[in-house]
Image (cartoon, rainbow, N blue to C red; front, side, top):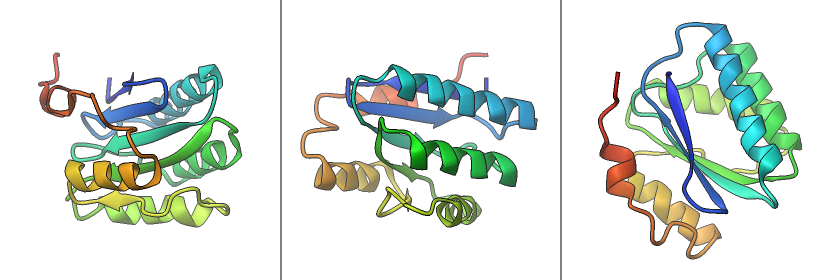
Length: 141
């Protein structure tokens, strides 16, 4: 699996990418999995994505993601972190497809910056979560 979607609280979802998706089919599965999480949420949720090791890269899939997030009533806002030089290009592409951008800042250089951003718009949303374990746990093959 290229990614893991974890509901870390009833209002926050953490997405960790472990590698670049090898196919559009994998990317489409991500969209389906995220839609399921949003569909099952009782109210709007926030999304934090770890894009240090991978990200969506197919333009059509990025458009589908923007469409899902823009129109889904259970998406509050999202942000991501990565220092990869290419990630801002893909996040920028997503922003161009999202006409009603629900994100004020799409990408941050560190987890701490992304958490601070989320806290600024939803105080307490990231508290009590073991971020070290979520972010640093090795990938099991």
